[in-house]
Amino acid sequence: MRILVSGATGYVGSRLIPRLVASGHEVSCMMRDASRAPTRVAKSTRLVVADALRPESLAAAMQGIDVAYYLIHSMSASGGDFQERDRLAAHNFAVAARQAGVDRIIYLGGLASETSQISLHLKSRHETGEALRRFGPPVTEFRAGIVVGNGSVSFELIRYLTERLPIMICPRWVITRTQPIAIDDVLDYLVTALQSPESTGQVIEIGGATIETYRSMMLTYARARRLRRWLLRVPVLTPRLSSYWLRLVTPIPTSIARPLIEGLRTEVVCRSTRAAELFPAIRPMGYAAAIEKTLTRTLPDDSLRETLPCRPAHVFARRGGILCDVRQVVTDASPKDLFSVITHLGGSNGYLYANSLWRIRGWLDLCLGGVGMTRNLGRGPVNKSDHVDFWYVQDLEADRRLLLRAEMKLPGRAWLEFLLTPQLSGRTLVGCYAWFQPRGLLGELYWWTLYPIHILIFRGMVQAVCRKAAGSVTMQADTAEMR
Image (cartoon, rainbow, N blue to C red):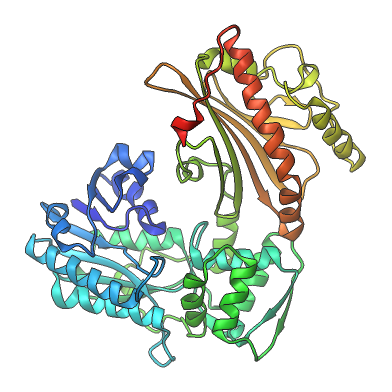
């Protein structure tokens, strides 16, 4: 089929596209800014620039499309009323789809029990579905509650609170019932609906195999991460106060946190069995299994790297519970010469910069019962599965990539990655990625305590690597170009 995915750079859209491509469909990705498209998406799909709030931009995007996925949400946009933007965007999209002869729209909305006092956020999700049905072609509307997966805002809220707060003072909504669903199960429904014509015109509630409360979700997450947490429930925290508290202890903006908090007071449990009747082959997993699958991913992965800005000299980002500090330099040295220098780092060769600080870190690790810097090679380049100092060579691609996993004593997991990318100018972009997955509050404190030292040693090490690889050629790190 010829498929249009709106919201292609969003959480669900960016994960849906690879599945559609793998199924053999011809996929067009609709986004407001094509420069934000991940590399994998740009290579395998057609990119169309359009904005649902600008109806004149939609006609070209809809041309020749059989099925359009509507995955747009205005809550994260700044300024104005997100409900009004949602209604207007849905109206424009539906009208354009009908005029272009699109056969069907598939929409992922929000789940809320009809007997509950519905929040403005969930009410807007339902109104969006109504606008699509009223003005557009036939619609398949899925309604889901909390989506469990790295990067989902509602799941990240649970992650931040549980990781950062050993003792939580919680409002009454922590005992509200909800039916979370794994992102993989959501994607299964969205893809399978293409081959399910009987789902056309249906509103389908989807949820996981277990019914939880927000309290049980946080405690289940804590057990999976081997964290001890205490939750104290009080009746005095209003949604406004709760959103301010969330802004203080999490990076989620108040503009997003407050609508989410309002929604947490609404019971979110499937009342219909239509999903099982229409899609009997899909057996959603329970919350504990979804947590286990989310936390056991291989790190770091390409999807994390692709979400980072491409060319600044220095980038710090937090993605799906992972902290990343990136140093990038453009040099005249070749990837082969650079890789030779990088694979000789450590051991008796040292790290080319601030070696005394590296030795102090190794001594501290030894004092804590770790391996320290006792496994010095220094006899030549490292190979995959080698151990050098407190590093394990997890992955190695000649003249392109070296990934080291830290084996020192840490309140979390850490990696150091070097990535070499040839440029059209004949130069080489050298990227040094320091990845860290903190475990609990101690992990956060560890990262930020050492962050000033990381800035010093990683910047100096990358520059020293480039100088050594370039030999007599002067390194030209044009940071102005990258900014």
